[in-house]
Length: 218
Length: 218
DNA sequence: CGATCTGAGATTGTATACATATGATGGTAG
DNA sequence: CTACCATCATATGTATACAATCTCAGATCG
Image 1 (cartoon, rainbow over the protein chains, first blue to last red):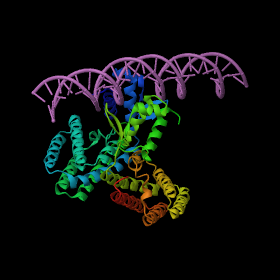
Image 2: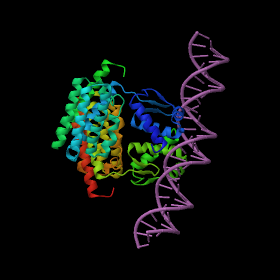
Image 3: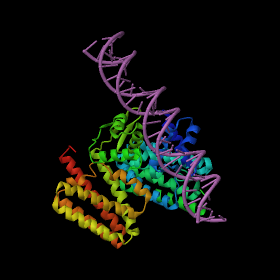
Image 4: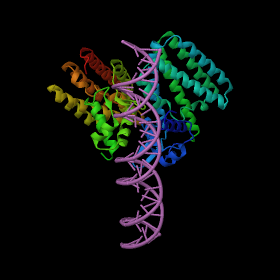
């Protein structure tokens, strides 16, 4: 944390993503400034940034609240993510540096090892490794504009913790998608990579939405 | 303008979009606060918002500059826009209210009337009408998340003024795309609407990129 | 002569005080 | 008892003062 505004931003952001601040919860400037031990100024800046990213809903003169995501919202988020991230996979297939491929293989190995356990902790670990894999692929796509848009449809509460909702079968298939994706990238086949990524994201969408229908709580 | 921060934001934003503040130009907080007659606080807020939208590049402790867009950036912007806006067109084909269709017809009429003149002023007028048409279609898509992402690939300098670069032939074809799009929406054919929108955006991309290669100045 | 250090000026980052808007409370009129 | 309005408390919006950081010119050293 180099400055107060950045620190407040990161702390608030992770609190929203991991669910420790719930949707609809109020973000009072004074309350937060006391909590972080800084003045309202950097707090305001952090809240405005989160508002621009869509994690927070802001009403003039009426303060900010954590955004909430309806079933419909999440469905659209996954549809958009499928389009953006499949484009990224296509770019990556053409641009990826071969040295990166073993690293992706290794991430698949580690995810599959964790997947055998299926403990809450291992599922969270898979979520981290999954984010790292997707991040490396999008970095290989080397598109700054894509990189700036993707967080809005990737870094969303529930979505970042979605692996907890997988069954052993759907988790195994998801691991398979990763292997397919790496194979497509290795072969430089943009269409295959895009199609695989699209399938992967849409399958994830269904896992999340079905779990939400079964358990209307979060 | 209800408050100072909003006013500064809108003024800066339109100044960047219409080119009166050029890429790489410095945005000094004190200078702008004097210029707008408000304190630095709302100026800072406006600059941070523009930074989140990608119109401004911000470096900690070193201030903000207007972003610049390379040929590669613009190419990626149009590729992403084609994907997002074609998705929006598909949604709109399924969700549009029939009462809106005559309004779209009328916008096409007015654009074609302006297109016959081909004066600088009429081309700017077409740009406005075009933005209105695309905006109505995206509104019909009724996807808040899509609506929040699209500005990043639509409201970009050069892009918003691109009609000035059209030849009479490419302009006529662009007007034709609009007619096709409205026909697809009227028929409720999502795939047709998406495909038409995609073609429309990719054609616009080529017009802009070819013009930029011919005239490396803006 | 070139590289590095130093310090003044200028700019951004943060804290705090004041201004304004919102929402709740309680009292009054109907 | 309900509806409305005035008033006050609280939160946000803005201005300003102070602190930290960066820039750049000029001096010093190798």
